[in-house]
Each structure stands twice: as C-alpha cells, then as structure tokens.
Length: 460
Image (cartoon, rainbow, N blue to C red; front, side, top):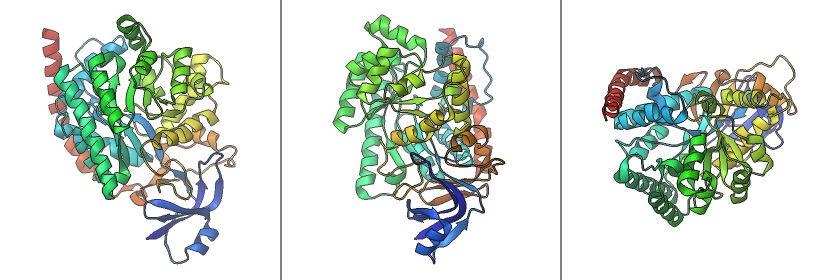
C-alpha cells in the first residue's frame, strides 16, 4: 500500500541536498517511491492516504555509526572506587564490571530503553557493539527481538575479547558466526527481519584480543565474507600496548592480521598517526567518530579532517551516549575548534557530511537499500520536526540550521521502513512507561551485582 507525507519542508540530504517547499514523499512498502512537491506527488498518487506534515521539516532518520545498547544501566549507578584517572581505569572499574553484571533480562531492557530514546530523537538506524560476558550465547537474538519490537533498524555484533578467558573468546566468536548466518537465512527466505536487522563481526579492541583469538576470528569472518566492527586507538594505551607487545602500531597490526578492509568499521581512531591514517584510507576501512564519548573519557580528539583528506570514509556515532545525533553533530562541530584553537576547522558542512553521507556509506555495508537520504529507492526512514526557522532555510544554509537550530527535541514523528513508530510525540510500538518502570525496578539488581564484582576484584 502506498501512502504519503505531504505539505512538509523536505530536506533530501542528497549530495548536494535539496530543500523542497511544500514537499511530499510517497512511501510504497518499506521504500520511498517518489519525492517532489505535494502537487506533483498527489498527481501521481491521487487516492493515497496522507499524513499532513503541516509545514514541518522532513528529514531522513538519523544514523548512529557506533553505539553500545548494553551501557544503559550505568546511568546514575553509584561507584565506590576512587574516580578513574585514565581510560584503562574507566574500562576496568566501570564498563568491564557492568557488562559482566548483565543477564538476559538486563540485556533486553538496556536495549529497549536505548531504542525508545532513538525513536524519540529520530535515530532510525543504529550500529551496535555488544558485550555481556555472563550472557553471550543468544545475546544478539535478545537484541534483535528488542529492535524488531521497536521497529527500528540495527546492525548487531558481539565484541570478541580475551579478557574473559579462552571460553569467553570462543563463545563470542561463535555468537557472531551464528547470528551472521541467521541474518543471511532471514534475507534468503524473505523474512521481514532481514530488512531491519544486519550483522557484523565484533572485536573489542586490539589490546584485548591476542594473536590466537584474532587468527580464529579472521578465519571465520573470511569464510563468511564479512568485515569487523572494532575499537581502534581510542586511547594512547592501545598504541602503547601494540608497540610493546607486537612491535608495531595498532592499525599496522590490524592490517597485518587481516582485520582491516572495505567492510570493516573502526570506532574512534583518536591516536592514529599519519601512516596509520594512510593505511586506513588505502584499505577502505570505515571510521566512526564519537566526540561526546571522547570528551567524557578525556582520551583526546580524533584527527577527523586528516582522515577525510586522506580519502577515508568517516561517520558519526555516539558510543552509547543519548541517541540524539543532532547533539553529536554539535559536539563534533565544537570540539575540533577548541582543540585546534582555530574557529575555521570542522565547518558545519564537514560535520553534516559525516552525519549523513559518511554514515549512509557505512550503513550501505549492511543493507541493500540506501538510508540517510530521501530519494526514490531508499528505505522509508523519515522524521518530522517542528523546527520553525526564524531566518530563511535553504539548501545552501541547511548545514548551519542543523548545527545551530535543529535538535532531536524537535522530532514529532518517526517512521522506519514505512512504519510510523511515533506520531505527534506519542510512541506507537513501545510502552515507554512500562519499560522504564521495569528497568528502574531491575537496576538495583544490576548495581548490586556490579558491586559484588568490584569487591571480588579488589580482594584479589
């Protein structure tokens, strides 16, 4: 069935973008069939039902190139250690304890609260990087069920690591392989899940994956003809570890061991040098930039402009921060200026190129139709925003409105794959109040388990 969104200010986010006053979109199934003025689209589909945008801004749903659903229970959690003084301390004292505390229920709830946040802020495609060492087998199925319940689009993987012993590493590899095969079966059978769910092969980071585990993971990924999703040089400690143990920098080690390539997504890349940047670009590896997380962890600022000049594809993620990708755009715009002490760096157009064109290119690794753009043949992932500009909004200055005016709080309606997930700020697929209450009731269980893990580690 074809239906329409009419009477909107349609911003296509093509390259270059178009802004259509009194624009409309025709949606056929899960794809966009036509984009034009309301008169043009109505003329072709005179009998189709329509959602009247009432002059609202119409954008493609936002894409998050790197996130962690599993971190939701960290919000407000009391920590009884001394405040972490560096990134390795943050990992050991917070994230690696929290992921060990998760069980099946926590994995499901942490995903659902993140998905609610995504719908509310207009983020329709998320590339997740999961960890739950006490609940590995089937964990990606739990996430997949939550994604399908929400109605969003997500690429899932399990982060393989040696930090939980050989059995944990083996289980992580097997979970990736199992889920990758499952997604392929869905798509081959025409199962609707195959249109919304995708898979990659997760690795935590070079400094927690030893040669034997890396070799096995690479062999399995090659057999499946897939790439990896991995943290790369997020902190200087990653580079230091690689130089000390392997005698080469992180990116060079990953290239030697077969991890890099055009299907691989490298998160962060904060501490890469010029040679590593050239290697990332030459191998076609994709990069995701997470400025809010990098600032929060005090790890530094990624050399994004140098990576883009070298020809690398760079997108924008959130590393588990809120799924308001408009806030991430603003952070990216600002942090590079203060870091360089130069207001000319990282212009609005460059940020938007990452958030839309870079992220769309990354998403194209996982889905057969385009996302992040409003054009015929793209997935019908569309958001309406009640942003009322008080200066002219044109294709030429749209990037500046996105940075200085538009925010996720303006999102009123979220559509993914042609299905309305939120209309007039009312969620239609998830019961936010019930899920939040369930998560609140279960958070103390996770926090107590976290503290028990912390006390056990301190006693060693």
